[in-house]
Image (cartoon, rainbow, N blue to C red; front, side, top):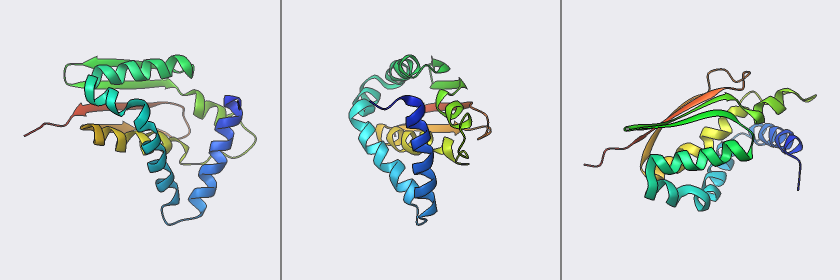
Length: 142
């Protein structure tokens, strides 16, 4: 298994390469990641809604050693990343960080949440600071 600090450095370079190919290649890659993630969380989000999202991202916080707060409110789920370990490792690297590195999270998360029936507001804040915020709302059914 590849160590996480090597993995994020690899990802950083993959993102740079795909972006250099133009024609939306990086965004296509994000959509492929989103489709792969469906097997891990689409049914959980559909069946358990906001509570399922909290369970999923609580597990991610533990597994990836994230300093983040996940909170369920009656009308929304909020994730506040206080210190992203992935971007922190990319910034602590001898290679230049890809300026759009943080876009990989909303790149796969937003399409999956839409498919599950939710609306997501994602705030990267500053791509050079390992913090972000995501708010997810259930789309009203009419």
